[in-house]
Length: 118
Image (cartoon, rainbow, N blue to C red; front, side, top):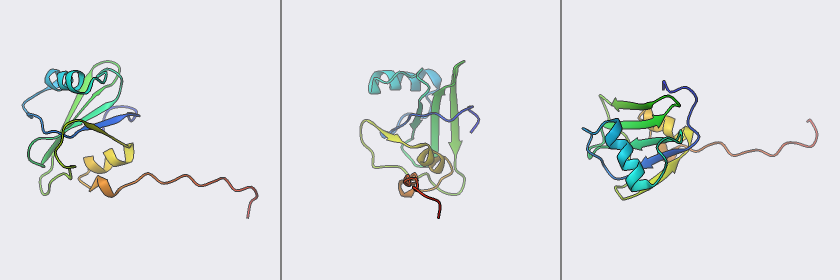
């Protein structure tokens, strides 16, 4: 994605939104519904009622960036529709954006550092 460095905090808004909304409308949802600062550098992911598209809103330090992607031959995998937001890892966000089932993608677990070289 073309947004500079990857956001450290990523939130998926689980309730479908009107995809006619742009920067201002989606920023208002973030501020009113989630109480999270839209200018914090976090990424906010939105879904329509159908599963064919995604919108991502992020502040890059100089302005709000709105990314809109529509898949041509398949649908995005979404959690069940509910109110509220859920956090995603950068790996899960990348999988979602590529149309992969992000629910099956997990960040690699940390391995303890060996005490001696084998």
